[in-house]
Image (cartoon, rainbow, N blue to C red; front, side):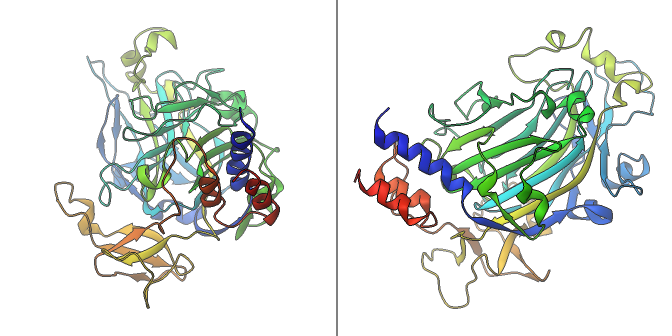
Length: 415
C-alpha cells in the first residue's frame, strides 16, 4: 500500500471523528409513536404487519409507564391455527421525517427481539417518492436472534457501490457488493450486539453516520459507549468514538449518488430468511410451525427502546434549492433553518407518478412546516467526482475543510 493511499484512508476515516452534530429529532417517551407511520400489510415472510389501531388494541406498540421506554412486539397471546402458510401479527413503522446526508442516528436499545423465526431490523430507507432508488442502510439485522447469532450491518443500493477492501473497521466483511439481495454485509464481532446476549448485558448503543466521506456504523455494549453520547442531548461531538464497526468509504460507493434522504424503519419480521440461508440451519423443525399455536415462542420477540436521536452535522453543506438551481439564492435556507425532509400526505400514495419533484414540507427547528414550490434537496457540487482510487483532490473534498490545518499540510506533500 502506497504512502498516499495509507494517508488517504486515515484522513477519510478521521473525517468521521471530527465535527459536532446538533439534535434535530428525538423519538422517546410518551410521544415516541406519534412521529411514525404504521405500515400495514405483508412482505416476504409470515408477519402480518398491522395498522396503528390494531397495534394499540393488541398492545403491540406502547410506552412502558414505569420506564418511558417504547415497546414494539410480535403478538404472543393469540392462538394461530395450523396452515400451509400461517401469519402472526407484528409491526413495521416508518418515520414521518426523512434525513439528508450529514445525518447521525443514535439508538439506545434495552432489548432486541430474538427467538427462532424472529428477524428484527432497524434501518434507514431512501424516500422512493423523491428518488426511486435512494439506498438502504441496515444498522441492525439478525436472523432468528438465537444464541451467538451476530448482528449484521449492510448497505443496499443500485449497481456501482462496493465496500472498499481497505476500509478500516472492527467488524468482519461478508460481502462487498452492495447491489445484490444480501447487500454489502459486515458481521458485528461483539456477541453482545444481538439476541439474548444483548438483553443480558442490559442493551447497548447503535449509531450510524451518513456523511459525504462515507457511511459508518458503530455499536457499544452497555457501559462502554463514549462519554460524548451521554453528556449532551443537544450536541454530540464524535471525536472520541474510535473505529467504526462497519465502514463504507465514498471512494468506492458515492454517497450522494446512491443515497437520498433517509427515513427510519423499525420492524420485526417472521420466517423471512436471507437468500442463501435456510431456517433448518439455524433452528430445528419447520419455521411455519413456530408461527402457529399459542404464541409462547414470541415471548422475547420485542424491542425495548430508550430513545432514537437524529443529529445533523453542523458543517453540513446541504442546501434546499428550487428545481434546476445550483447556486444559493436569496430566501433559500441552509440546514441551519430547515433540517427535515417530510413528504406530504398527498405524496405518499403516488407510487405511479412520473414526477421527480413532489411537493415537500420542510420542518423548521421551531416545529413549523413550510411548503416550498417544487423544492428539492441538493448537495452542493464538489471539487471532483468520485475517483476509482483516492486522490489528493478527493481528500480535500472529503475533509470538507473541517479538519485541522496540519492534515492539509500532510496531504500537500503528496500533491
